[in-house]
Amino acid sequence: MHCASLGEFEQGRPLLEELKMTNKELRIVLTFFSPSGYEVMKDYKGADHVFYLPMDSPVNAKRFLDILKPSLVLWVKYEYWFYYLQELHRRNIPTVLVSGIFRQNQPFFTWYGAIWRKMLGSFTHFFVQNEESKDLLKTIGFTSNVSVNGDTRFDRVLEIANTFEPLPLIEEFCGDSKVIVAGSTWEEDEIELLHFVKAHPEIKFIIAPHEIDEENLNDVKEGFRNSIFLSAFEQTSNLKSETSNVLIIDNIGMLSRLYRYATIAYVGGGFGDDGVHNVLEAAVYGMPVVFGPVYEKYEEAKGLVDEEGGISINGPLKLEGVLNALLNDEGERKRRGAAAKNYVLAHAGASQKIIRFIQENRLLTS
View 1 (cartoon, rainbow, N blue to C red):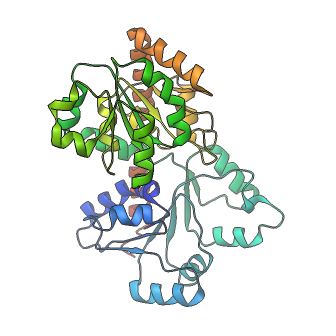
View 2 (cartoon, one colour; view 1 turned 60 degrees about the vertical axis):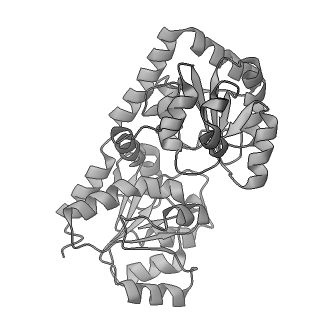
View 3 (cartoon, rainbow, N blue to C red; view 1 turned 180 degrees about the vertical axis):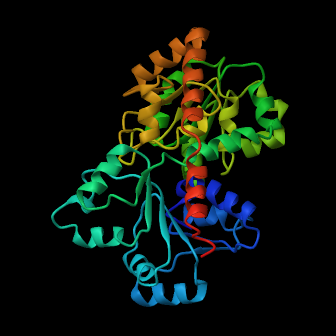
C-alpha cells in the first residue's frame, strides 16, 4: 500500500488490517512519500515492512518490484508515480485506487494531460468517493472499472471511537468545564481563536498545532498567554489545572482521541490554500465541527456542512458568534452534534466493499 502521507495512511489502514486479519499469511509492505507519514508510522505493527517509496525512475521501479513481487497494490487517494504505475501495468499486477477523488481542473482532463491519463490506465479498478469523480473518469474513457464507494476514513474514525481509551491527564485538565478542542491548527487558525480565548477564561481550550517544532510551539504559547504545554502539565498536573485554561499539545498521535473531550471542535487548515484537515475525527464523537472557509475540495467537509453538523466561518467575528451561540444553546449544540455523528455512521462501509471486490476477483489468490 502506498500513501503520500499520514492522512492517506489513515484512509487505507482499515483495509490493511482487515486483509491481514482474514489472510494471516499475507506479508504487507507500506510505503510513504512524506516524512510526516513515515516518521509517525515507521514502527507500525500492522505491516511487515515500512519504507519510503524510492524516487520514481525506470530503474527504481523495476528493482523495487523485482524485490517485492507484489500480488496486489493499493494506491491511496492520489499522488501518481509514472514509472511505478507503468511497471505495475507491464507486469499485470492488480493495482487498486482507494478513496480516489477527481476534479475538473486536474491535468487528467486537460488537452495536455496525455501522460497523466496514461498513468490512470495502469489501474485495475478505481474506488472513488463521489459521482462527480466517476463522471469525470467516464469523459476520458474509464467506465467499466470505476465504483463510487465513498471514503474509507469513515470506517477508520469509527474504529478509533469504538476502541477509545481515556486520557486521564486530559480529563483532569477539562474537569467539569465546557471544552473547545482546536485540532491541526495553523497560525491563521490561532489568530482566529485568540480573542475568543482571552474573553472566556471559564472555558477550557485544548490546542493541537499542526506543526510541533519547538519554534512554532513557543510562538503558539506566547500567543495564548494563559497556557501550558501538555508535557509541562504532566509534571505539575493539578497545580496548573486551576490557573491555565489553555492546554497546548506538544506531541503527535493524540488528536483523534482529544476530540472525545470537546463540547465543540474546531478543525484547522480552513484558512490556508490546502484547505481544512480531517473533520471526521471530530464529527464521529457527536459534536458540532467548526472550520474555515476553504473546504470545497473535501467531500466530507461539504457533506458535514450540508447535514448541519459542520459550520464554516470566515473570520473571528463569525467564529465568536457561532461559538457563543452553540455554547449558550444546548439544544442546538446537541442537534448539530447528532447530525455530525449520523453523517459519519451513514457513510461507513467503504472498506468492506473493497475487501469484497478483492475477494470476489481473487486478487490475492489467483
